Length: 112
Length: 120
Image (tube, rainbow over all chains, first blue to last red; front, side, top):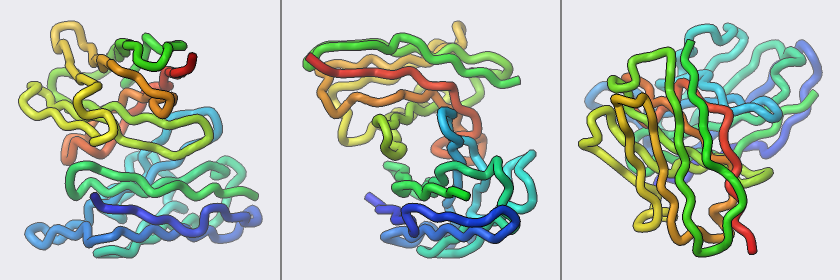
């Protein structure tokens, strides 16, 4: 199984500042045949189900604010929130979908 | 609007059984793969099981293989999870989630979840 490791486990950022969350996979999730990284990011607000933010490592889901961006390739990925808003307080998870089983990172708790 | 509503959760003794249901609406259910994903209290997300739109592909996490059975009824727009031989570590919120059209393991819509507590 591919192990997804996020860092840090928790992060405190001031309103308006940048937040950066890292995700590392134990093996590459880049498919050479289509040059796509099989990596997604989710946001889980308190008491709510997860919400899909980003897929293919860097493509925002429809309706997701452009302050959220994803980057990286192969085994190292980053979720960046360019200017933190109060509603961004949540736990963020990366997930690979390269193979079975799809696995999630342990989550990063983002606080203000 | 896509809606996924889970039901069937509750308290069950170790070794017991439970059947979860997920009622889908707002989209053509028969065209989408579906997943069950669980989250133990205060912990992270764990994928449990996948079923494709026609039931021709079904996969399970090793932790539930042989104990859980995923199924669907496209005529009833419903997804199910039969859970047998339940253990303490099956305690979690179970989410029904729609598979993304480009990769069924990506979940683009989630239900609110139903809590399963396995305890004597």
